[in-house]
Length: 239
Image 1 (cartoon, helix red, strand yellow):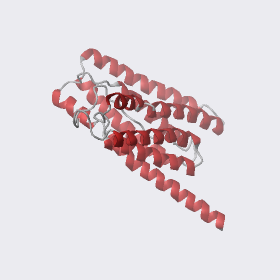
Image 2 (tube, rainbow, N blue to C red):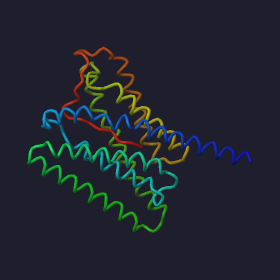
Image 3 (cartoon, helix red, strand yellow):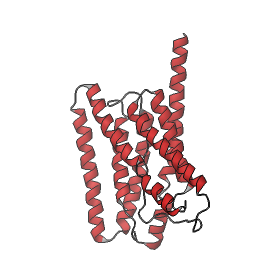
Image 4 (cartoon, rainbow, N blue to C red):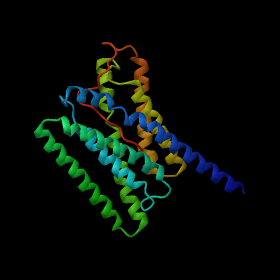
């Protein structure tokens, strides 16, 4: 009876962490909105890069696939957050394609097509693996590697903040959202005993803490608060 009660508590904590992670992820999903408001307003992508959104889409698709029951056990909250994330990325990419110059359109459409082809190869290939554990490990390692590379993307911003001694290009809400989302899915992964979730999100949590500490240290921007994002925009993905 005690064991059953402990198990129910563990499941409840895991679900609570997963739901919180889904909620906090919206802060990251919405972070590129100022970039695309500027693009739509100017009817030009200027020097903004569309590559982060292409890579974020691939990451969302792979991680959403990992959360499905045929790949891993009891990880549907990972699928929900990344499915929503994939929709956001598709919207951003569509806007980017609309306003980028013609040569850039062909490039972006080609990259988008490549993402769907690669995802189809990964997903369909995994279904050909009969052994569930081998299938789980294969997609788990791919998903984990993709998440780690995405969580490493803020290192560019961290380096920029230290060099400029200013948080002008590191919005507080973005750093806070990253920390809260990563911490939520770190706990989710721990409660679910899933290293493919808690390892990359543990890294994301550490980077989130570092960004918040830098924000406190350099809380008075050297050139005033900026409402515009970096020229080369960056995107984080979830769980």
